[in-house]
Amino acid sequence: MVRRPALSPRLAGLGTSIFAEMSALAAATGAINLGQGFPDEDGPIEVADAAVAAIRAGQNQYPPGPGIEPLRRAIAEHQERFWGLTFDPDTEVLVTTGATEAIAAAVLALCDPGDEVLAFEPTFDSYPAVAALAGARLRPVTLVPPAYEADVEALAAHVTDRTRVVLVNTPHNPTGKVFTGDELGAIAQVCVERDLVAVTDEVYEHLVFDGRHRPLASFPGMAERTLTISSAGKTFSVTGWKIGWVCGPRELIAAVRTAKQFLTYVSGAPFQPAVAVGLGLGDEFYAALASGLRAKRDLLCEGLRVAGFDVFVPQGTYFATVDIRPVGGTDGLEFCRSLPERCGVVAVPSSVFYEDPADGRHLVRFAFCKRTEVLTEAADRLAGLRGGS
Ligand SMILES: Cc1ncc(COP(=O)(O)O)c(C=O)c1O
Image 1: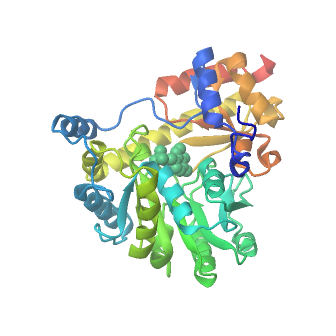
Image 2: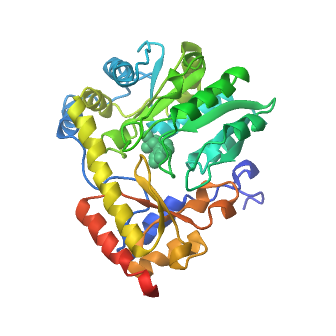
């Protein structure tokens, strides 16, 4: 038997994903799973049909490493159409295995051991993990509820000689915050003044209910130093397809591609033409996506309020965060582990998104990307928490 610990000390702090634990709990107890962020309905039929047609037509072998040309072109057209950003599909767009791989490949490509990555926390759980994979360190700047305002002065104060990357997620998971133009402008200024590369995670770019999404790359001085990342999962309700992309200046994209080719080499052949179809859908598709989710947000947030939680209403994404203290909770992890038993609903403790779990101890995240009847049933069940039942 090998005597040394199997897991490298570099990764020892990472543990098992909370989503796996909570989804397993939902499966074991039959509870409604408002933990992990995936829709329970399929996306546009044209997109699904295009994937089926691609499989039938034999697009089942390794596609080109950077992604098929029609998808790279569709991504570039999408960036121009929605955000006024111009990218050369041949050199400035790379298709990846979800946004997760794009983020990982970007951090691995840019960071050396000992380097630092800045991000606003709570952070999506892959960020500290990919920093650890690179031997780098994630240095968080905390967004404090209820306003979750970005403290850009604190961000600037965290920049050191080892800072390489600022990782910005807007719309933001788990808070549902959409960064304002002023916040993004100030972040851009820090990046320019301190010569940092920005890596942006914009997977919820089309799921905005209040305010307006603006890519960091559109701010002065940022196009030349930003890797803009998104994916098909949330926009087309195909989270299992894992088709993502990263756009940016040629040298940065070449660097990310160097890492990507040895992570996965290529990404899901038959899904690529299907995502190209999705990106070309009309404005009415995108408008209906946001308005449908806005109604679901309102439904769940109202249910959470009625149940007695203090609710931080999200401006975008799939998620609403609550303070559990008004319903007698103190520790979110304990609360989430007992919730299926108590009322048949699964949620996720926000503490897992903080470097110091104590900072998010009283916060819990619920997903509302579920069918209306599922959310209504969840709200009914949560109402049972009132009075300690
Ligand atoms: C902020 C954020 N980034 C990235 C991802 C992962 O995206 P993908 O499934 O395309 O890898 C998610 C999924 O939940 C997310 O919430």
